[in-house]
Each structure stands twice: as C-alpha cells, then as structure tokens.
Length: 235
Figure 1 (cartoon, rainbow, N blue to C red):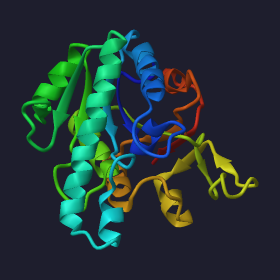
Figure 2 (figure 1 turned 120 degrees about the horizontal axis):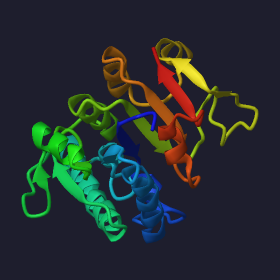
Figure 3 (figure 1 turned 90 degrees about the horizontal axis):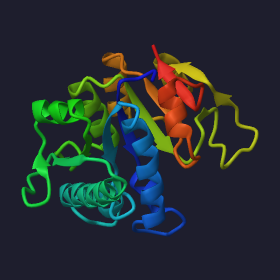
Figure 4 (figure 1 turned 90 degrees about the vertical axis):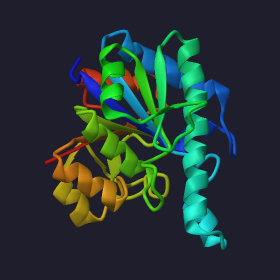
C-alpha cells in the first residue's frame, strides 16, 4: 500500500445517505466495509467525523443561540456519529477505539496521543470524536490536528464530489477538476478545500490532503494504493 497510516475525514452529512438528517445504517455499513479493506492490508486507519447531520454550531448561532453552547452541542454530535461508526466497524469484524476530546468516560476513552498511536500499531481503527474539545474550531481543524499528532502520512477527505474543481461541479457542469494542486494555488484561486485554519495547519506541517468521492465503492482502497483518484493537495 502507498500509505501506511492515514487519517480519514468524513463529514456528518456523509452519514445521512439519502436522508434529510440523522444516520443511514446502510451508508454506515458501506463505509465500514471500505475501511475493512484497508485494515486487512495492514493500513493503520484513524477517523474524524463531523456532526452536521445532527447539529451544527454555526447554524445554531445564526439563529440566536450562544455560539459556544452551539459548538459544544456539535462536539457531542460527533461523538454520537463516532459511536455509530464504531458499531458498524465492529459488526464488520474491525477492532476499534473511540477517543473523545471532551470527557465522556462511560462511552469513549479520553484522547491521549500515545495511547491512540499504540492502538493504531495494534491494528485497531481509532475514531476521534469531540472535535478539538474547543469551540470555534471545526472538525476539519480537528482532523488536521489529530493527523499531525499521530504522524499520519496523509489526510483523506471523503466527500460526495470526486475531487477539487474550479467551481462547484454541482452548480456548474463545466467546472474543471484538478488532479493535483499546490497549497499555494488553492489559496490563490480561493478554492474551498477545508476551512482556513485547518488548511494553513496542514500546509505548515507539509501534510498532504487528498479529496475524493467516498461514496464510490472501492475508491478508498484505490486512493491508499496510490492510484490517481480525486485531487491531491501538496507543496
């Protein structure tokens, strides 16, 4: 395999499937099967999931809710999603550990870097919930931070789009896809890959990002195998 240790970033919305909100069990099972193909090949997999399918702090704040309270609700939503994915993975025969940046000892281990790395070395999939544990930071930032801490080789951002385009391909069918693009060009062109904090952190630590379509069966395995799937962002 081209990468030994990866961090997979999934949005909360990805877990909805064709639903308007919540979690689609079929989508979860599909993702678990995709992850298992990597584990069976000896790839060490860490995962960060968003919580937008349940609650998004920014949306709550725009409607008058206190932003800090809203972000804490969003962090709890990521733990719910983490528990759901953990269950699906274990049903597929994958050993997992859920670690949370906020203390919920009854359902998740606290995030401890060295412990997370030992789990990965033992072939367990580690799911990071609770974001960074701080308000005003997105799960994109949490994904990059955790990837750096566990010394991942790459961040794999699984989306419903097959890469980075000049414009939103769902809005403009004539948008052009990039197979490869530098961090600098992403900033110059104003392309939305991750939020600015996360993207800058990734750039400063020379951590490549691959954006790809997670919903196409086999794509995750192809990306980690080194095939030219999606868009790679690098120096």
